[in-house]
Image (cartoon, rainbow, N blue to C red; front, side, top):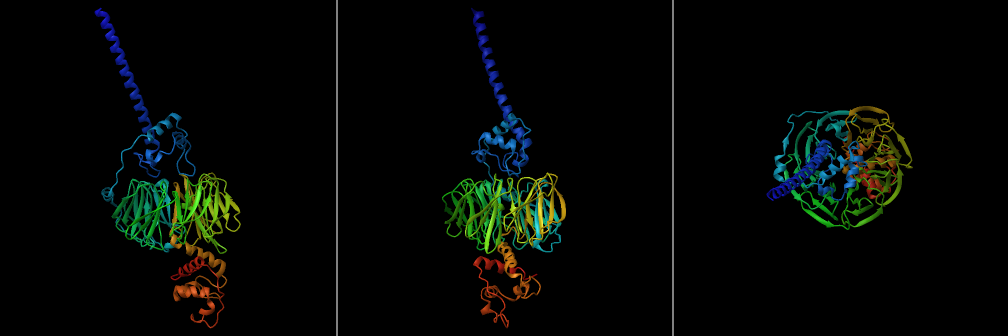
Length: 564
């Protein structure tokens, strides 16, 4: 009997031990699976998305950012990339490996804290040595982001004047309007300060863990950094990078853009139906309710309207900045990439064009008498479109090796291939429009400089994944009316006037030096009654029936020749 009891006890103990062993084994197996997902993430994803999933050049991959994306969709994104983004494909990974990464991305993360004390402690002085990099005309200075090499170039015309390294640089560089400095943001929250007059990257500071964009007050004294992690707006002194304030917000900021007509900036939320106006002097935030969120937007060249997308890009909506009343709305297919919208003037009207994400077309819109003019198939998913008054074309990319040229007169298409088999993206122009800069978006890529009117190649530079390019004139909205004025000059003034030389009428440089703005306007709209006051014996200038926006544009263009 004792033997039987002992045998039963041994059997029960053995079964219990085996059960514990199985449970331990299963737990260890699950832990191993979790660890393998983390290890795969660190190996393939962390360089762009941060080892703690906080985001670097790529967005943060924490559960709060991924909750609306299914496991199946995440799997597909990892395997096949995401159209019109810079993410590579990982189709060499097995489905099991990808599922392990997805499972790891769903694991919770601790609360991310980045307060004013963290910000202050992150400050770093970089270079104390001043030098002259040889800038002749700030208006033709362009900045180039070489993303694959973590570098920024400073170019003037076809020459590279300087370059510097800046880890995780992605785009969104901002100039001060005096042309003395620019600022470099990164997705992981750093802001660098480069002095153009001193030829050096002076210092840097980290605003947050994941940064959306930066903007400057119109007087250039303050930097505004919008942050997705933690959700906040951080304000800095632009000269010292000293943090002035950190204002927490509840929502994902789409972007913050400054106004040049008043001391104000505007931002919206992607996930909340609210718009915020910021007084850039007092730092007061005023919240306004909207009927639906504005996910992406730009401000028109005359700072009267907000042009935005709503309902996941299915609708284009236009609001008055002053009243916030909706003045126009149109259903659309595919999210328009409004950040890359481009503008031009033709035959008394103003236009903008935008590519559409995941759709193979560019749309043309008439501004102010708001309407859709044309939908143009460009043969692929484009990301950027750009033009300049010196060019007869819109320059667009379509996701492959083709440069798409859209004639601004009849919207006909011409295709060119800058480098066979290598992806072309993003054209930028010099301030005067003589040069066009093209990015060949590959690790063994190039930056190509063309003469914009003849397409003659001037020079090409090796570049590791060159992306955004930022010209001083073309990237500051305050100069957009002047660019329109260049087109108005070509249409209405060139027969009698030259910019710097005497023609039938006086040169613009002389007019700008001798006359104030009121005298210039009077002579344009009513020369019959103003010619005597300007010292002429007779009037030979016709009156021009220009609207307010045309008049501002041509006057801005004339005044730009004052010191030339």
